[in-house]
Image 1 (tube, rainbow, N blue to C red):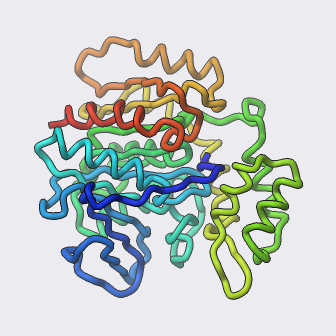
Image 2 (cartoon, rainbow, N blue to C red; image 1 turned 120 degrees about the vertical axis):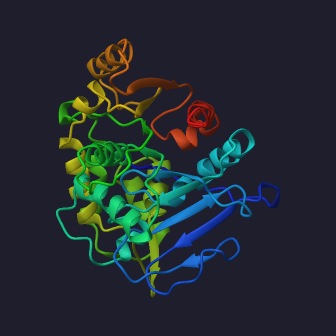
Length: 341
């Protein structure tokens, strides 16, 4: 699920020359302004942030980056900057990273108009609506972590089925980061995420302070790192603190995440698409039978009539791949993206 630990997002240094644009929902400022330009829009499309390595170059290709449960796009800034910088050194095309806040999360939680059901299918449809509203080309690559991995799989599946229209281009690459592609059964889970969500439901909507929440969570037996991560999801509201996510909507999305299965997509990847699952070697999310099934699918010899399915192992990492081993993750992802040239 989403990162349940403190994520300290590194600030870009002057040497990196990285362009970052934040996008919200009311008044519009032109995209060609300098870094940290804020674009606000009136329609109910997802909040997002753009990262490019070279502000002076028009982007030619786009990668969407999708966070997990209770996360936000900003959790992926550091990784996305590193990936964009790496691609700029080896790729003839300028890449743009679009870090999306999924419905009920981050800045998107402040936007009204995302109708229920709050499930994986609608979360994926939100991405399509964003592309259409902005008049963008369809993303070349979609990268999703945990719950965001299943949103990526659903987005790809719906693109293939022309659910978003006849003129949709399917992603050339799909990266599913430490996300189980099938149903997530309760008996195969340690129940930590469920306990966290139940605890958050028991709390009032307004809390006295972040420190109070962290101490309260630790008193209930949660680890310090997890408690601090939960505390990082608060925002100031007058003298009190409130959640930066829509808790009930996020819980519905989590339930949908557990129920959805995309094995059929992995078994028959559409022609022209490469689907890669990155499994962290120290992650606790993987049942041995699922790992065996993944290995069997990835070892099949194709006849060229379908796309490709690959499995990568990220060493020295738990579930929070972008925090535990971001360098190793870039080293896995970047060469494959460059190969699209």
